[in-house]
Length: 217
Ligand SMILES: NC(=O)c1ccc[n+]([C@@H]2O[C@H](COP(=O)([O-])OP(=O)(O)OC[C@H]3O[C@@H](n4cnc5c(N)ncnc54)[C@H](OP(=O)(O)O)[C@@H]3O)[C@@H](O)[C@H]2O)c1
Image (cartoon, rainbow, N blue to C red; front, side, top):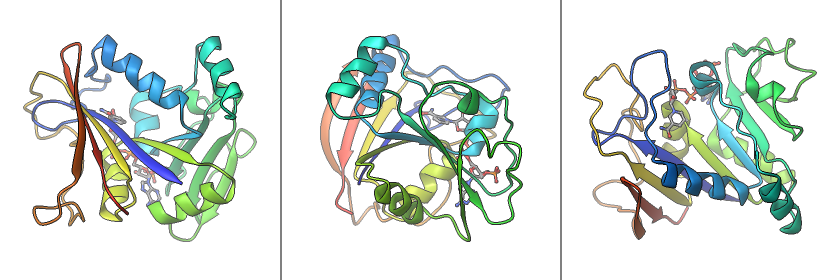
């Protein structure tokens, strides 16, 4: 399965600020391009931290795009995937309530998920890793997974070297507050000064700089 990470950051590498409202980083042009990318993927993954912080719906809203997905052999609705160890997710979250597509929640053994188990498929694992998520989703026939965040999830995927493509969009402003979440947390990464990723494309979308990188797993 191909794993694509899509993330937007500030100039100083933050993916949000420390306020309770979601920080808008993308330009309209960049956001449109992200929605196109979502349309070509079987599944989209964000961690439970992002569900709690942003309450994203993650649905394909345009009927035209939904039809296009069907023609391309994908389910009309993108499959939504999240991960929790605490089980601290709410049945009223838009992740569970919006869209008719399959929702999958990876839960660490012991997580209390009874409130949402009728709203999604719960996959209980002893230890959740990027590799175990990929294996489970591959076994269901999914071919392209889009991973959108947040920091904890992105760190796990890059730490395990489980990313094939990175789409990095940089907004032209600083956040300047170290209490804000960064793109990744401190970690030893496979992509490092001795092992660089391949930059394959650079675009300007509105005032956003969008870079695409590839990497062999
Ligand atoms: N700019 C962007 O492109 C972008 C995109 C998405 C999100 N964000 C931002 O990212 C921030 C959230 O980042 P975050 O790091 O707090 O949250 P996150 O990465 O979305 O989710 C972290 C949570 O996922 C669960 N989790 C992660 N790895 C796990 C594992 N191996 N096993 C079991 N559970 C696991 C845990 O949930 P439990 O706590 O429930 O156990 C953990 O607390 C928000 O501010 C959001 O706005 C930005």
